[in-house]
Length: 389
Image (cartoon, rainbow, N blue to C red):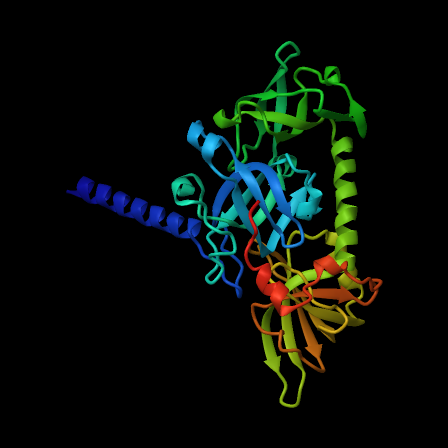
């Protein structure tokens, strides 16, 4: 009897565990909170289409030995959540920074309520081929994704007659993605980096531990990959990372630092206290610069879910940071930084769940390119739904 009761308890616990996992996988994001840890689903594929202004795109999902998906299936289109971050070459990035043809890894959620049509569903005959999870909290190229988790690759064999390279994963296996012994394709377009410059394939030594970015291969249907980049040393990757980091700093100084309103306390006669959480996926230097100037005035502008602003000069107010707070173990999309601000005046947009962009007084004011701004209610409505190619 005790054995039977023990087995029943194990089955019940397993059922609860599976139910909890399913709930995390099918978590529906909301405007007022960040997603739980280990939620959403992992998806990967080749980046094929990008709408960088509205932070949307389309990927050709990794092959799964299903010829119907590869021959007939459409792209998996996605939208970045407002707090969704993008990384390329180990540094924060924008979707426009990732070259088309790059293999990416991401964590995706079901659409938030009211945004089910942001990404139009595929035709009925293709719906079994495309996941419903189409709002991304993170997008990373392979070198970022695997390096972050401690996985690299050891070169086992290079065949110049067939243009095949055999490698084996070493280090800490990544939670998702590919592991073990893998055969990759390479060709004359594969870039090999050593001493921060391009070298030849023949400079790769057997047994070397390297880092790589993948791309499309002729055997994609059967989960085969080509090689876009191979880094033979850390110095070469650090150079690429630094170049990308600087681009991200420049971008966010001009467009301002993204975050969302967490809470608002209105004063009786105007103004109020506003708590803002800063998004992840931004170069640390930007947060440091805002912190260094926190005793000066800070501008906070209204933005849409796509992080597009209207007019920085008119749709913003100046406030003062009265407290800078760091939260341990932040949820996905959250940098862990909370700023508590006091405003003499509040605009209607300052409400919990709404997104904002924040400007340090030390940053030069630069007008955002006109095509990036929302210029009318009609335009805002028009871009609610992703126009598929």
